[in-house]
Image (cartoon, rainbow, N blue to C red):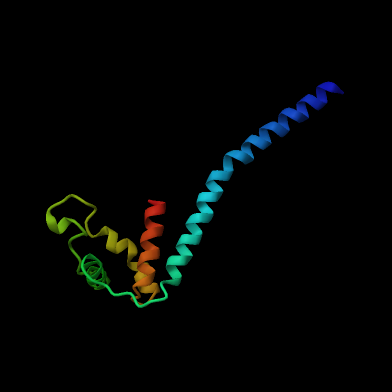
Length: 114
């Protein structure tokens, strides 16, 4: 009887450790989901695109026409991923009807998963 109880206690301890090891990942996932939907919802105020953000939006427009040949930093001669960033975000851009707010949420999701 004592041997059976010790086996059950060891099994419970393993399960307890397994559950505890999952908690940080669950918290990070919940935080990422909250941030994603907050970005999808957008700001209360009107967003004005200027500077680099305006260039990003113009580049997304050109990518939607399949005319974008340089990436975010490749226009300066750097070896960044090139226009693939724009083409990966393109489905999100089409889904939103060319909206700006979803690009922030899509960029966040892109950075989380890649």
